[in-house]
Image (cartoon, rainbow over all chains, first blue to last red; front, top):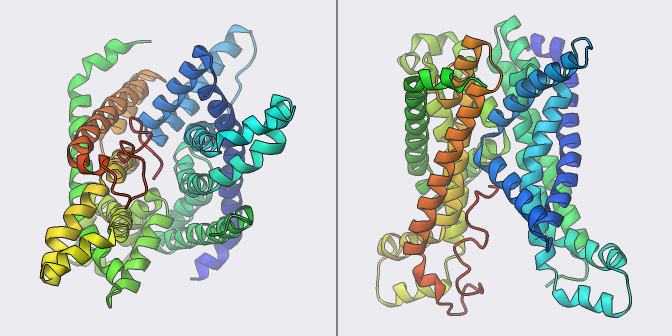
Length: 227
Length: 249
């Protein structure tokens, strides 16, 4: 127990890394998801095909495999490019490799979430806005977006909860996140059980707080739609 | 790209595929055996339901990697564990992975089954009761056959997620598909080939599973194509409107 108190600041910094990776990847995933959904809903063939390949590949491969591919493969690719340009060795930051990998993976899931949410908004909403003379962009921004957000929220929350747990695997590429630091602390003190229980409690706390926030957000976006 | 190095070690990859499939299948079977009673106790508010709810919340709320670490590295901390009969299993990475994966899959499957049982149309149960079936008969002849079928699309996702989850085994030294890919990469100091081969193998297995589940769903969810106004879903859309790619669980 004394060890846990001694290592508490270290674990705290690890938890901060975990949360930062999770939040930044969610931002990236949201951008990729929005682009992906727009591409999948496009009338042109090429964007649809690219988005389809993206979601299919991501969902067929385990997250850890993609993270390792992006980290080690990306490192090798970057070295080759940098070397060809006659520059010195550049290291990919583990933090950003983790953020990019996880954002890339969950962008594919959010693509489906956003696409489904767009399709769930009644067609008449967009048509009416267009008939009133709004430009396509104004239609999307003022009429559709808030409704898409309402439809997407349950799926979005679900992706967030899975994404948070997924961040645990970035410790495998050596990032000093909560899991990686707890592993080291557990080995140093020979009390791994204690430290992993602490990690589990932090994850449960994140899940719990997220659950509360999501429930609040769902009530809020559903104002006026209560049954 | 030197894929001949991968082909030279095809036997390693084959054994990796076996390890991955073996672990996935066993974890799913044991998980299902945990999930069925757990789901029934969740829907009936038995004495055990708080305990079961805690189990499901715990395993669904934490990463599989940490659960595996807790069992593999964590339990070895205690002397009484190391001196008990259980040490025979707990010192082996393979058994620890299997225990963690089974408990994890059990929790997710329990939640899927609970949902399917809870959304059983009331008329099915009332009809069975009206025919004079005992409670046990209602459960085994009506409730479960109906709920298990409707759980199929989501269970298919759970199967794919368990397959993808087994990569955690490679972190605790097991030579599954990813483990072999990383070994080959490390052996020849290459960056892509082993991992890309592993990725391709996972994709092939994933989409085979997805295809199998779509066939099975077509067979066992045929009756739901006719809508009696109970499910409120559109005809022909029951088997997952977006089938074909694994969904988020």
